Every structure is written in structure tokens, then in C-alpha cells.
Amino acid sequence: MIIKTITCHDVYNVGASLQAYALSAYLSKLGHQVEIINYKPYYLKHYQLWGVKNPKYDKPVVGLLYNLAKLPGRLKERFSQRKKAFDSFTKEYLPVTKTTYQNNDELKQANLDADIIFAGSDQIWNTIFQNGKDPAFYLDFAPADSVCASYAASFATEDIDENYKEKISEWLRNLNHVSVRETSGVTILNNLGITTAQQVVDPVFLLSKTEWEALLKDNIPTEKYLLIYDFDENIEMNAKAVELAQSNGWSIYSMFPNSICDKCFFDDGPLKFVELVKNAEMVISNSFHAVAFSIIFERQFVLYERKEKINTRMRDLLKGLGISMNGENIDYKEVDALLQSQISSSKKYIDKVIDSVRKI
Image 1 (cartoon, rainbow, N blue to C red):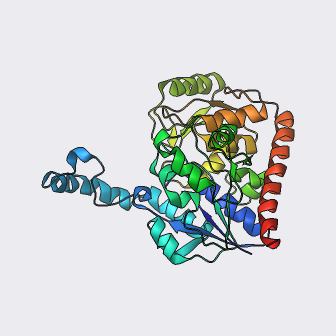
Image 2: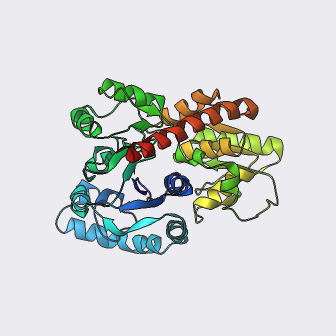
Image 3: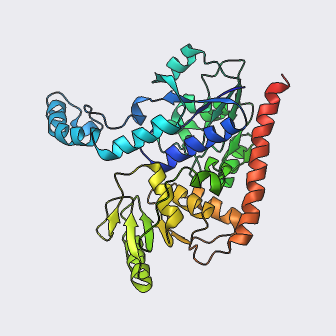
């Protein structure tokens, strides 16, 4: 069976890359021919050498001077080790289509050959960002003979942009099967009149701990450390990290530059992130996928909320597994029983989507 997925797969974010890999890998494991649609609209393009995102500077002459001033830094980033690490992961692990599509119209004209198209996972329906307002992520382009489904799509917020509710409701009604990652997402869908949606787990949970470990190098830590993974330069997180590190004699590792860390891995790719979580004594983060992999590898963690209003995904995940935001001293025997039940239900949802094609 030919299956295609569409998600924000190439945005230089470890969680986005890993969830894209996980869904394609799981579907491939079931014996299907899987491709990730290489969808790169203007708002998802990174490391561009030229362009003005700030309207303040998007004016004749001023815009030119702005771009010239930014060019040296952009060139440095364009050829950075971090970009190379992510591009290497994409090339090796993400089965993207040979053709790159830049907008919904191009996808429509392509008339993609697919028995099933899955939208998701991650924050593809988050209307704070442009992707949540893009009809492509609601499969508006799908050929009439393809089964259209979402898998673990996330709104990431308590509600969606009021100006887009009617349109999003219209797009969603064209899907044959709908699943979301959060219980809050189910509530949003119910309020839009979509009453058959199912909650499923993030794709990273579809692969076992053993399957993730098989992707990693056998790097044995030379010291005990806690991992801090912070998108917001959160002062409270730093203070907590220092407190725990000093009281336990741990070093502090970070995926982003941080004045308190002993080692920074900013130039490393997604699998280094997985490795760092796996071997950490403690994870301190405001990242959904840092928490997800902490749970997969049964790590203790402390979770902080993000400044952006995108915290429902983390709260819903923990609530469903009976874990508090302060995840220290987690009894993973109890958590695993709940998690395996959710994973089983999620896999059954995928089976249902696949079986619906066989019945046509």
C-alpha cells in the first residue's frame, strides 16, 4: 500500500524531525511504501540568505541595507555544523519525496499517488503559526481516491484562532479519519462539530525503546549529568538545574547555548538529543519531546511551561499517564501500563485507517 505523510518535518527542531521519522518508520514496518511529502512553503524555509521577515524593515533601500547587514551572519548559519547535522539526519532517515512542493496549489496539481495520506503529527494545526492556517495540512490537496486521515495532529493550544474556525471546520470535514494528540484537541474538534475524533499518542511512542536505542551509537557517558533543554532562556529552569547539579555532583549538559552548562550540543542533530536524554540522570525542560523521550527511557524529569501558549500538549500527556509536572520520583511501572494501553489504541487507529482502504 502506498502511504504518504505531511508534517513539519524539516524545520531544524529535534522533536519535529523525530516524530516525522517515527511515523514513517512505523508505517514502513507494517509493510507499506511510505514517503513524507517534501512540503516546504515559504514560512517553513530556514537558513535563507535573503529576505525580510520584519515589516518594519521591508521597504525599498531599507530592506536592501537590512539584507546586506544580515548576510554575513546568515552565510555562517547556512554552512553551520548544526545545519549539516540536521540535513544529514533528513537525508538518512526521512523518506521524503524527490519533488519539493511550495504551496497547496502545487500539491493539488501534483495529483499525488497514494492510497492513504496522513496529516501529522506535531503542531501542524496550531493557529498561532502559519501552518495551522494552511489548507495543505488539512489535506485539502488530496486526490479524490485517497483515504485522508490525521495522525496525532496537534492544535497545541486550548482553542484556535476565531477567524479560522469556520474554514478549519470545513477542511476537517473532508477527512475520512481524524485523530489528535491531546484531549484538548478532541474538545476543540467537538466544538467544531467533529465528534468522531480519537486521541492517539505522539508517533515517537509507536517505536519501542529498543528500536530507538538501535539508532544510537554506543557512547557511554564519562560522567553523570543532567540535561537542560530550554527554548525560553528560563531563569527558573537554570536555577533548578544548578541546584540539582550541585546537590548531586552532576555536570550540566544543554542542547542550546547556556551560560550554566558544562557542555553544549547545539551543533548536534536529533539522534544526539535522544542519546543525551537516554543517558541523563535528570532532564529539565519545557519541551514536549524532551518529556516524551524521558518517558520512553524512564528518566526522571522536571517540566516547565513555555512562554508561548502551547502547553496543553505537555499537560495532557502527563495527565493521561498520571505524572505531575515535577516528574521526579516517577514510578514507571504504573506509567508503562497506562502508556502501553494508549499505544495499543493508537496502533488500532492506524489499522482502522488501513483497513478502510482494503474495504473500498
